[in-house]
Image (cartoon, rainbow, N blue to C red; front, top):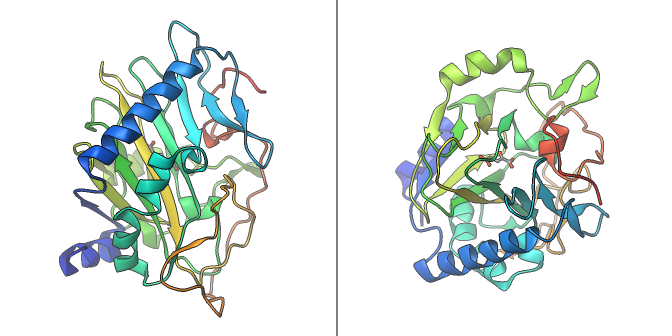
Length: 288
Ligand SMILES: O=C(O)CCC(=O)C(=O)O
């Protein structure tokens, strides 16, 4: 699936961008389902849709209304939609991931991050591994573009090489789920934009430092995100966004051993916020 040049780029820089993460038909099915969810969100004035941990599946930005829907996240769309299952579990993305950390790959969780025109949602710099620490860090976050993504509509930014660095996600003794904001300027200087067309996929190392500003354009920016660990990476905490498919082996074979690497890992609490946007300090329309 991936060329040796792409694989080398991933390990050296911490990410790689490639095309055709889904077929045209699959992308259309994902997009249509998401459009339905955005329509449905007009009927709600606070977060809704209960998941197995009691949190809301559908997360709304403050200011959401029937006239101006601001659905910012759908947690584990794979649990409630065949179209999402088809792409994230049966599709080519897990095969790409297997080229990087395989052959044995598990599904962990997934989510849709949505930045519609007029929304304020941003993503503060963070590293995914802090949220779901495992016994080793052979884990890939795949980010599939559902829309064309540009600097204007709030694209993802990554910090090449920062997957070899470790940052605290606690400030003043509290887990904030983000890197100390005093480091933002220097991380921004080092960061590069991930731009592309619908169907492109960015495969990112679990320790990659990444984030992104709000959408300041009149075009939507919708992105599907999925975390895949190697089968022998065993979770140290319950998933922060549990799916009915969490820990399922989807390529290769189940592991017979837990592979450990030497590491000191910050242990995040099992926080109560419905989504990490709220945790990172961005207001929500309201709790269930
Ligand atoms: O939506 C984005 O641009 C990035 C999202 C992200 O980093 C995350 O949800 O962990």
